[in-house]
Length: 227
Image (cartoon, rainbow, N blue to C red; front, top):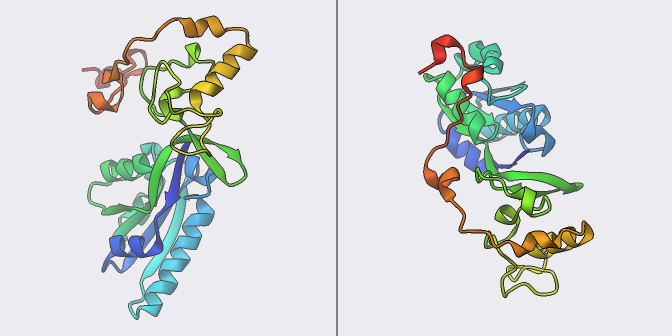
């Protein structure tokens, strides 16, 4: 899931600026799960903006709505009327949601209410941890299902480094050494021979370093959409 955190209220107020009619749009998927931008958070932020603007002496009309997924245009059609009647939209979706609304409603001014952080999972109540860097070339099949790109501080392909101590990363004792985890996992599965094959330098062209990425499935495209 995509993990995000809500921006401080003062930063959101700054992004809203002098706009009088404000619509807060929540998203019903990832950011709902991590309690950053679902229906509950959208309602709370809208109420906070209303109260804060009254205290500032410039009361704003702030409403809120939540769609199932901000990242898909078909779900945004349902709020087209509300988008068109406000001065600014505060998106409580991830960065994809913000950009989806900008592309779908080019006349609307959309600002982010969240800081999108990483692809992760909840490891315990109230704790989310990064698990995937979306590098475009998954190697979990040779690392026992533990990603060294996302979980090793140096993204090493042939770890561990010399800084690993007692199974923890030199960056912080709170960070488990990813390569220790990989070793323990492969040892438990009697697959340590996997580590004997040295991995070549990673081809980062499949990652963000190769520029904006695009996936095209010709079998799913409609005739009118083909290049």
